[in-house]
View (cartoon, rainbow, N blue to C red):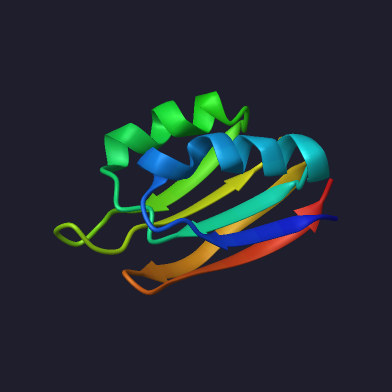
Amino acid sequence: MKILSWNVWGLGNTRASLKYILQTYKPQIVFLYETKIRLMQMDVVRVDLKFENCFTVGRNGLRGGLTMLWSSDIAVNIASYSQHHINAEICNE
């Protein structure tokens, strides 16, 4: 299983770089922090990055934002979350 965790410092300017990394390494799970985008915008990003599943903790003002994306061959159960973490149980199907 490949997992990518990345501080994107705002997804607006780095999406092309992120797409390149995803195409090159093909991770099954991606954790993004400091996304700085609204919840509704993340669904557009999810589709653009070609992931089937997504869990997002929205930004706080113009700061923060957490997102976990995963492919359909992974089962994820979100156990807890806050502005500072996403706790998930992950299983290969």
